[in-house]
Image (cartoon, rainbow over all chains, first blue to last red; front, side):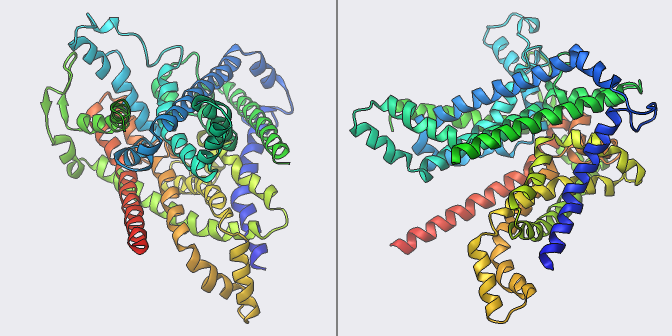
Amino acid sequence: MLARLGLLLYVLLCVVPLALGLGYVAAYSFGLIGLLNHGFTTVHWQAVLQDKAFWQSLGFSLYCAFSSMSIVLISASALLMALRKQLSRGYLSYFIYFPLVLPTLVAAFICFQLWSKSGFISRLLFQIGFLSNLEAFPEFVNDACGIGIIFTHAFMATPFFTLLFLQLYKSEKIQALQDLALTLGATPGQTWQKVALPILWQKSIFSIFLYFVFIMGAYETPLLLGRQSPQMIAPLIIRKLQKFNLQDIPQAYAITTAYLLLLMGVAMAVLRNLKMRAV
Amino acid sequence: MTKKYRLLALLTAFLLVFPILFVVMLSLGKTWSYPALLPEHWSVATWSSLFQDQRISQGIVLSLIISISVGATASFLSLLLARSIAYSAHQRQWLVGSYLPYLVSPVVLAAAWQYYFLRLGLSGQVQGVWLAQFLITLPFGVIFFNSFWNSHIRSLEQLAATLGGSPWQGFWLVSFPLAKGPLLICFFQSFLISWFEYGLTALIGVGKVQTLPLLVFQYVGEANIFYAALASCLLMAPPLLLLWINKRLVFIRSEGMEDQKE
């Protein structure tokens, strides 16, 4: 009885709101509901799928997520390889948690104040004579390559993955495996390349995927550090929703539906892959 | 430790701590014109506005009320819901529903929910923001407690049942005392999800429900970097405090274990 009541509550509080939201978005995008809609149509979907901005936005989100995660995995692995002992005890074991207390919004604000043309780094370079004027400083924020967005996410995620790798390194007894590889004639470099890193990356694949998706759907960082074109997917959806042109609303919902379908497809593929590996 | 690694550790520590020191420095500045490296004038005026500027003080109180109540409700309820899911025959399938809100960005979810909140008269209301934040924190709690309801806890409840306890007594007198530690952790995490939330709050609250993250964004928009830095410091304060408490507990516990070994 208690269990059934719990399941019912779960459906009401977790499943129904999600289904209602996604259902509304999909129905709106197909013209079934909404202010200017008059019945089923695929015209909004056609408009979105032919819109260069949508594909650019999707590509840009993928690029930002991929670049950030690449930096994160390389940095976290390097930190583990070089500073494993210091990360386990001493001041570094404390300081490694500091970036985890930063909300995304604050991290983006700090990045802007550090790396904008009038930011701290530009001032520092000016003071030591590397810069002649403010304009000579390259664009790191609100730039077309999303450098600010990528590095903000990388900065926030690197400590998390360093700690995750450290935990896995201990729990999977990787040190013992590396010692074994050494006795079998491997070089120290090979023990990392062929033994430790593949285990660490494989064991944390689900966390990597979740963080990848989190970066893809980022809103605050591109809002502060990005530009209107190319724009990441979440700000694009919200921009289209908040435009005065009501015809943009079904398109915004079509983008949302397409993005969700894509994510669900990828998530299912990843989960199936993980299951097959487990078998 | 060789000199090279010591230097690398120092550099890493500096890179990790510098952004926080930088934002604290900005909150203490008054003027900072280019190309000055540090603010030309320092002042605690921004910090004293904490008690004078109603926008900030109200933002803190509102954020605290929403985050504490969301954290507490979501943690307790998710403990119960996770139990039902963990003991059901289709645990994995049920759990998918909890992962989905995290695949979808909260702000995108807010865009999908906006219509219903409008119809229910919750748009632009504190209750609306509370409900929206609760709906995204609850699945997190369910995922969190899924591993708590393992076979060990189940067998303890079954033992209580064989000794004549009712299912409710099994939960309340056996499992719940064991869940107090995880409940506290789940509360902290849920509190932080709610405390940091910007996009969902901005959309459902339509800018009327001014929590601290919204204030940061507002001050950035007004190019008021000193106030934005102050609001940022206030946003970072609870997680820093939790980190300090957590580290202290860990250190005390490990020292205790060392003493026991001796």
